[in-house]
Every structure is written in C-alpha cells, then in structure tokens.
Image (tube, rainbow, N blue to C red; front, side, top):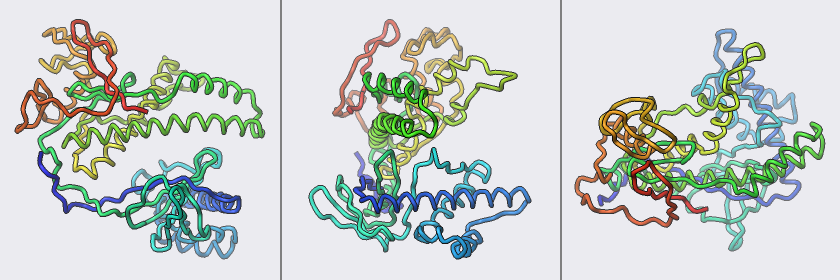
Amino acid sequence: MVAAAEGGVPVLSGRRYRLELDPVQAGLCEVFGDVCRAVWNTALEQRREYRRRGAWMNYVPQTAELAEAKREFRWLAEAPSHVLQQTLRDLDRACRERGTFRVRWRSKARWSPSFRFPAGNRITVERIGRKRGRAKLPKLRWVRFRWSRPLDGEVRSATVNRRGRHWFVSFLVEDGRQTPKRHAMPSTAVGVDRGVKVAATTSDGAFHDRPYITAGETVRLRRLQQRLARCERGSNRRRAVLARINAVTGRVRDRRADFCARTANTLATRNAVVVMEDLRTRNMTASVSGTVEAPGRNVRAKAGLNRAVLDKGWHMLELALRSAARTTGTTITLVPAAYTSQTCHVCKHVDPRNRESQADFECTACGHRDHADVNAAKNILSAAGHAVPGRGDLGAARSAKRQPPATRTRTVGIPVPRGGEEVKVRRTPA
C-alpha cells in the first residue's frame, strides 16, 4: 500500500447540529428565511426580465439596488445584510451555472427556510457541556445546539435551515485536511452499476443495498396519504397530517443519505478510480403523462420506474462519491450508459435478448453467464479503458489470490443466474 501524498488542495468539511431555539429565536429564523426567499424571487424575476430584453444583470448592481430598497422597505432590514448579500451571490452562481430561466423559484409552500452567515469571523462556537454547545450568530445572539460530534476546525461559515419542525445549523470548517496528490492504492479501479433492484453493483461482484423504509412505515405512510387526500386545503388538519408525513419521509431520507455516504466512503477508500454511467436522473424521471389531447403511453409503468429510481438515490450516490473523493484522491469517471446492460463482457456481443430478466444474463453468441448487474458494471469499467481481471484485483503488485479486507457488514445471499453460484450482497447496516 502506497501512502497518500499530502500537499494538495485544502478540503472544507461540514458539521451539522440540531438547534435548540427558544420561541423568539425560532420566529427570527422564520423571518430571515422569508426575507431571503423574497429577495431570491425578486432578483430572479429582475434577471429574467433583463434577459428578455437582451441585457444582463449580475450580482454587483443587484447588491447596490438592495441597499437602496432597504431604505424604502423596512422589513428587508430585519435580516442581516451579509445574509441577503449571500443570497444574491448564490443566485448569481446558480444563474451562471444553469441559466437564468432554469433556476427555480423558492415557493413558500415547498421551499424549506434556509439562510447562510458567510462571515466566519462573526461566528463564535463554544462547548458548554458533554451534549450541549452554543454558537453566537448575528442578530440571533447565542443559540444552543446538540453537540453530536466534535467541531475540529476553524469555522468559515454557518448555514441555518429548517426541516420539518426542527432547525439545524451546518458549520463549514477548515480542519487542515487536503486532497491527496495520489491515492493510497493508485492501481485500483472499479465500475459501478446503479439499478432499481440493487442500488449499486460493482465490477468485483459486490452488491450494495439496504431498505430505506420498514413495512410498518409503509403502511403508516399510505394511511396518512389517504387521510391527506380527504383534508381541506389550507386547514389546520391538513398541516398536521403533512407534519406526520414529513416525519416518516424524513427518516427515509436520512437512511438513504447515510447509505450513500457509507457506500461512497467504501468505494473511494478502496479504489483510485471509480467509473459510473453518465446518467441524467432529472431527465430520466421526467413526467411522460403527455397532454389531455395526447396522453402518454405506459404512464403508470413509467411513474413506478421514476419512483424506484428516485428511491435508490442515484444522483445522491454520485454526489457522495465526489465528496468522498476529495479526501482520498479518487478520480470519478463517467462513461456513456448506452448498451452496457445488453453487451456481453466476454465477447462484446450486443443483443437485447442477452438479458433475460433483471438478474439473469446469458450471451446468445458465446453462452457466457453472469449476474446482469455485475456484467453491466464490468462493461462500465471497460468503457473507461480499465481491464477487469478474473478476480477483480487491479493492483499490479498485489497477489491475485489476495481477498479484500473484511468489512463490518451483513452478508445476505440472493439467487443469481441459473448455473451460477450464490452471490453475497453487502448490505450497509442501519
């Protein structure tokens, strides 16, 4: 094993804690979020109007106009000025990266309040007990939070957001870590196939998956959705039912994020190159319902596929891999996804009949049999120019008989193509 070389790009890390706000502080946070939402929507509409006339509006003139607007509209001054400036800066970056007309509005009903304090020198964090800490934020003064993990670094900024009925603060800290110039195992690579049955399958035959919702939560969520359909819009009962639904879906979202982070850390730590399909998840899960005059075909089947894709968190896994790669020096490579599931890895024969079912793959030309997802992962790795040995060991200086290190995961056997052996599925524990 080669030691990772230091001296690369500094890496900023996030530390997230749950706030314990009093009613006054919670009300101020709501006000800050509403002001930032109004500034975002107004500035976005101004940018779009300028683009319709062939002109361009950017951050600098909008900041000057915001200072003038605060003199006329006193409610704009209720939020800290550098928080509103950061909102305009975030909007400027979003418009430059995605286009002015592709940036979304911040709806009062769908957008969770969020705002950022960009000046780290104005933020003071102290630990006041074994499980408690406090932070001094502009205009909020001292706010208490649960000390669930060490801070371990200098605070650069703080973001406050609400999810459900709880408020959270995320500190961006500089803990001295840097991106290695070279991975600890520079000769290793792996292909990853993302699926709707198993979240991630690698070219070395490992399956990474776990359930995000329990059977009891599924039944409870269905009943709550039925109750929501009978509630009057805008009523207190509807808001109460929505809060209970958000409590269930919030736990599901946390489990999905935890799985993606654990899987990404495992893949990035053990491999210098991770190859994935270039999937546009947003385009793939777009609605195909069509119009009233020309409704789409197989709408119910496509809706079920969309839900399965979104439930597995394909895009979240890619983001988690890119985040983990900053600390390991791993290279993330994307390859075209066309025909990776229909191509035989051995003879490169392409035929839709090669894949008989979700898990069965049998080449119609050479008769090669393999698990369909494993075969696709091997094709993904080969598309990036990496060879796949029989044992999946890409290290030139490592023994071909050496087995990968043991992991603290549960292994569950699942059936694979007929005539094959049982494949072990690595399920990340809850």
